[in-house]
Length: 389
Image 1 (cartoon, rainbow, N blue to C red):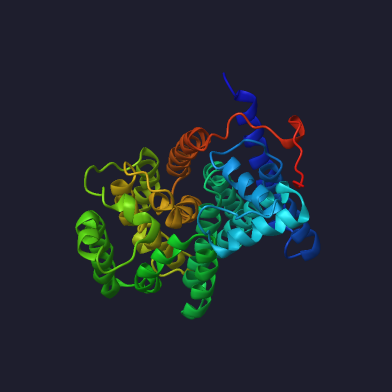
Image 2 (image 1 turned 90 degrees about the vertical axis):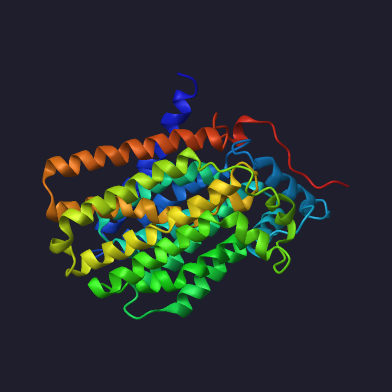
């Protein structure tokens, strides 16, 4: 099988990383110093893999060119990019090594994902490590291509997790973290539209059910009418560099297969809720699960918007669903966590198999989509990075 050894290498790195994270979390109560060291190793392992790569990921040479432009005193890019990305490119250029650039983006992405899962899954070592493993299999290949978008998506998840899990509605913290995501990719600002829904997700009980359904349905309808809304707003809102593409919206609609696959865990989440609402509704862990499930559901309207944008080929905008996709990774782990308490072993095994198929399918798809195969390192190529005279 072509690239089998590379696929095994990715898999080994991801599993090893998650094992370190798991052991680190297990030791947190007894030895925090060792715990933090082990968790750090778990986050560093895939980040180093991303850092030392060469010609892996569609956008690899675009970022390398920006790095070289800064090294040579030229304009970084033909258009301005977000401040956080520009800072990391400039910093690595000043330090004289592009490995630092690719490592930094990956480390930030992996760190934000881990911290978010740890918060959302109540520091449960087994299920935090599982969510982290799922994210590595699905998100890591994407992060080798859509570098800034992946960092923004992980920071967005951190913002959402702070809102869901805070005892008070910590909107200020949410806005600060979302601003961090915005500094990596400006499309993150879209999540602000869902803020009322995310706040409502913390409210449980039948009287909040109809408002939740109404808001989710409303956003799905709005997403379906994206071309119409663009036609109404294009003379009011400055869409900047995207306006030359957006004019084609409405010519075709096609939701990517990856988005359809990730809707499966959301459907499983609601099927589980339908059978077990009475068992989980009044428990704190159950209420957290309901919040994660509801917020994950906003992957649906974003996927509909992406359906309008996919065939148009609009860079960052066509990856809007990434902003909530990371919540779905957490949801898969959360469903299995809840099933530990409420369901038979056979049912949990069946769901685990379904999620494994979803994860592996997206892993293979994303490796190919991101052009992450074959995996090569800077040590396998004779590369010289030097300043021009």
